[in-house]
Image (cartoon, rainbow, N blue to C red; front, side):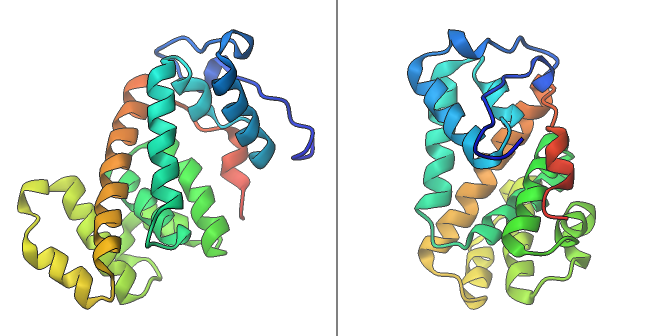
Length: 197
């Protein structure tokens, strides 16, 4: 099936701890958003199926997601690197696989996502990105230990003040996303495993 003729399909196996609604039963705005993403990806990512369970939360989640990727001082590959490094330390299967595919696509690197999931500190990345991920992972694992020196390290690595905010925002959002995905038992689409390889 090509990316232009994929029909939205909310899969019952998108998550195993809550029911997935029928696409036809959703409000028009949710149907439109899901149809747009299905058109873009060529399949309906399971996170859309899962979050449709609670429409008001679906709207808020994806509005914030869109703000994070559209109104940012970061490159898209940097956003996805943060997501995968954070999801790696959180052991979030859904986000490791789905955003691993996006790292491969945006970084144009078939190996980077696997390196980041396994251990971002040994990944083939530059010192700037290592500093970025050091702070993101610290904020994930030991948030009470984040200090002004961590922000200064990001500045010294070349990040703007807006980028510092964006690094923290992406990190915080995907910590939320990881925990929700694990709680609900979300499963990544099979298609994600092979994208960008």
